[in-house]
Every structure is written in structure tokens, then in C-alpha cells.
Length: 241
Image (tube, rainbow, N blue to C red; front, side):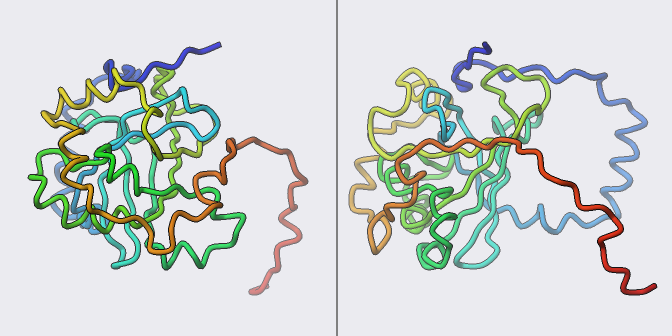
């Protein structure tokens, strides 16, 4: 059985393959000069937090979110295993306000997690951004819900993104994260989670309280493959024939 390692305590796995060739880099540079990367350019912030697998809280990873707003009620984030140029894209997260979360079907709500303690506890922060500036946005984040999938199990040392996507959850109380992982993150980014917590004590969570179906509804969640009948192409309506 594969053994997980808390990712913040070691470098991620080496990805197999040859180094990028000069010719490839030249084509990339030429394309970048004429193409628009509008969706990516909407990313406006870097959030660092911790995720654990929704079916196994002992598997925990440091997750770097690069986020952009779709509108005032929703933002979307690309998740990497680090902040460096060679970081691996390991997942994504959608973040919505309480207003949008309350419109979701009950079966859907359990796939979303809360951010209240993640923010108030000091475990979610913006690397390099002064706390006074961070708080202006984190006051909003504390009231939101997030839905996360990870596609690359870097904590198992996988060199490539193999296996099924995994639903991830966030910290909801003290004692859930490995102390050594938290300390390593504090050291890397020069922060004090205890001090962050003190400065955020005034913040509030969702106006209606944490929904009982959020955070998995108190149960573990795991995706599994189920074989089904494959609809043949002949069943597709041929509108233009």
C-alpha cells in the first residue's frame, strides 16, 4: 500500500520526461506574443491553505490557490502544489457566497466545505501580502463555501496524475492538521498562524451559520468508477440529416 507524505515537508515528485527543448520554447514564445490568455489573466490573488482527502483526514497537503472572480458571488481557483515556476497543477476549487450555496440541491451541498475556521484559525493566508490588506478580502472568504477536486496525488509521490479525482475538504477545527506540516509552512513563508488567528478573531462565518450538510455532512466521501451501458451513437438525434 502506498504511503502518503505531508507534502509541505518535502519536495514534490519529479515529473518524467525530457527537458523542454529550445525549439519548443521558441514556439511558445512566438505564440505567447500573439495569443490572448484572458481567462488566466483574470487571476488576481494567491491563497495558501491546507486540504485533506474527504475520505482520509490523515492525507493532508499544502494547496496553493491562484484565484479570479467570476463575479462578486463566485471565484474560481487553479490549485498547485507550490508557488514556484515548476509547480504542478493538482486541482481546482470553486468558491461561492452563502447566497449561492443555499440554492444548491441538498445532495450537492455535502460536496462543499466551509472556510470559516480555515480563515479565522489563521490557516488560510495570502503569501507576501500584509495582514491588514489580507483581512479586507478574508472577511468575505470566511463566509463562503468551496468545492475542491484534486487530480494529482502528489502526497503519494505520483510522478503523473493517475487515478480518479478526489474530493477534498478543509480544516474546520483545531487538532486536524499535523503540527509539523503547519510549522514547515510558517517557516517557509515567514508567518505566524497564531498571530494571524489573533488578528482575525472578530471575523464572522456564514450569516445563517454553517449548514449541517456542508463538509460532507459529517461523513467521508470518495469517488468510485461504476460501469454503465454505453449509449450508442445511433441514438443521437441527427438534426441536420
